[in-house]
Each structure stands twice: as structure tokens, then as C-alpha cells.
Image (cartoon, rainbow, N blue to C red; front, side, top):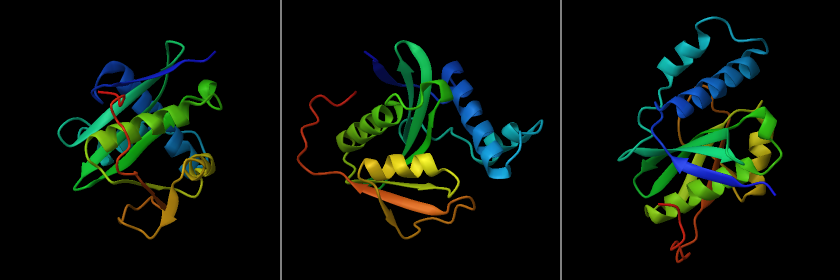
Length: 169
């Protein structure tokens, strides 16, 4: 049986930094349809830093599957809502429930923090991500930001009164 665990960590911690570099390398490859070039991942990290994905402005989760480093997700706190970002599962762990584990953890943290909804933006080429969000109750909404890479925007309302006594802390 596969066991997924998620742990809050700093985005500059070694495991988190490794996953963020892998995530951005994949985003570059998929956006341009070619391998990333020297310096492109560093440029992407500088253009879109993750240093706000720690309290009090956000949260960064690292996921392990059966003890092996497997994925990550970040959340930025907004007034009354949360913004999901940096959802990534390593290729070797895809299809084993990691995306769902990350979404469940982020949603529990968001509810515990008082958020009434989660929003995210994504791109057309990230078909698997869009399907994951749709399967988990996220619906497309009009654009809520002007990110130059965003082509689709999603939102999920978080039900009030859900017992978060077991929410990750």
C-alpha cells in the first residue's frame, strides 16, 4: 500500500529547492517544447520566486511517497482565500495519488487558516493538471490575475463547518 505524507517546509530547504528546480525545468520544457537551456531555470526562479511560500504569507508542502521525495505544492494566503501554486509530482510517482494527497493537504491547511476558497491559474499545455483540478471539484472561473503564463483559472469553494480537527498542523 502506498503511503503519502506532506510536510510544511521552507521553499529554500534542500528537498524543496530540488523539487522547485525540477518543477520549473519541466515548465520551461513544456512551454518551449524543447530541453531547458543553461540558465533558464535560474531565470525562471528569479522571475517567479517562491520566498513568499512561508508564514505569514504562505505555506510550502513537500510530499513523500513511501518515504521517497515525490512532490510539492505551495499556497499563498490572500484576504479570505488561498492561492494554490507550484503543484508538482515527480514523473516516477505520477498516477499514484500524489496530486490528490497534495490537494487534500493544501485544502485542509486553507480551511484551518480561515480561507473560504482556493484559486489557481494554469496553462493550456498542463492538461494533466487541469484534469486533476476538475476531478477534485475545481471549476474554471474568469481571470483573477494577469500572469503572462496563465491561460486557465480555477476555484474551489471550501465548505464551512468542515471539521478540521484532523487538519495537518
